[in-house]
Length: 279
Image 1 (cartoon, rainbow, N blue to C red):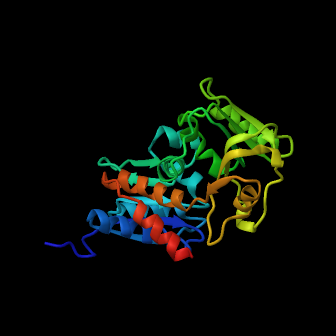
Image 2: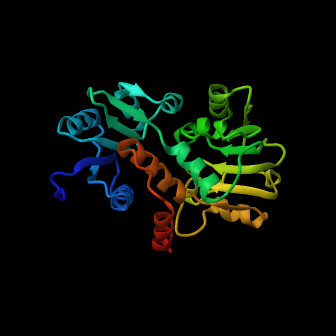
Image 3: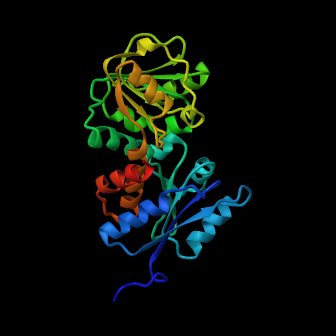
């Protein structure tokens, strides 16, 4: 017998603001694709009572949640069990309830980005010299999966050098040196450049020297939009190719879906559909 909407397993996303969220569209697409009986809703997180909202959702039978700004660090504090990548990131975007009632937290942004770069765009990160722009929560969430992808070195660049240095120190391992730099003092060129700043949302560009790009440099902006971002337009004028982060949005959601349902949905159709809808 087909489950009614009342009988469907409940999932959702908390954020503030939340109206713009594409998560319900994405997860309902995955559910239909994999024939999973779920209902996915978006919830406006209350800045004062977010923690109680999450607890109430699970007490009422909810199975899993996504968490977006500004609650990722607060969700981290709510968890009874954390994945290793969540522990490194200090924030979570995916929650699920265990059989014993424990809340498990994970962060899927980094693995989503790596899958988009390596699988969807056929770019290798192995032995590459990688530049990461920014030192906020978005970058903190991707550094462990990026490091594990095997680049020869990672440079974290930021307006405030001390913030970049703190991230470099936290994630540094001998197998993949991670160093810090201010934007203006960057030296040499890079094989891959990842923009993890929010500058693209404001139509701005970090103050980068053109010398960071060489022939064959591949650039990735974690933001996305109808038109190429300012960062990607700048890279293109210098002869670089690249992509925005629309695929990352879909891939991180697919990883959350897998954690909840143990089904890994094919993402290609949805990425293309969302790209078509944008244009």
